[in-house]
Image 1 (cartoon, rainbow, N blue to C red):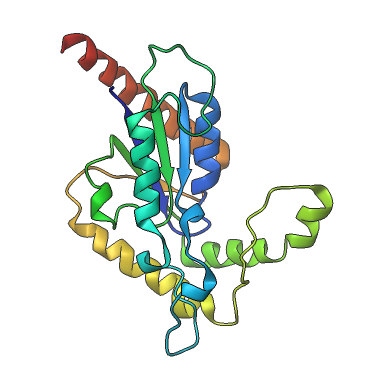
Image 2: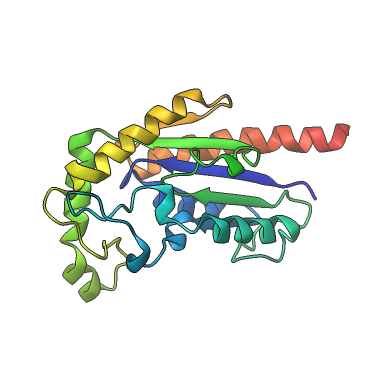
Length: 214
């Protein structure tokens, strides 16, 4: 069965999860897999010489389990995961995979029909991460679903691990041969959604044309 797989990657707190969820609400037959769901337990996370837990590396993730989840969806895309109900059975099944280290993992390279990468400047990234750490009490009292880091960042963790790893992984992506659409994560949630949604509608239309001619 023909499928359409979208990768949404980028810097921490860049808006990947929000964008993926917004797209899922509007795209027919759409499922989402989040890389964050495949972190290993803290007891299996390595620590560097500074005492920083090495969460922002591929080794912190159970990528084999993630690949197995993706394979299950590919085998039966209309019956896997929680997908949107809108759209007819004639619509191409869509899978959005979102996470911070998608395009640095070679087994995923052949999957992508469309790839997006969210970027935000250092100061904005640090501000957003710090802001989310202080939202726990407010989110619980208002029943808001908010990203809370567990364990929370220790002093110096962002500058000593998170940002350096992002720069390292971003540099590794310079050798990628397929097209990646880079997105400005400082844009509003609505603007980012509109930009990506319109792009995807065009790409999906191309796929339908290919189906008709083959």
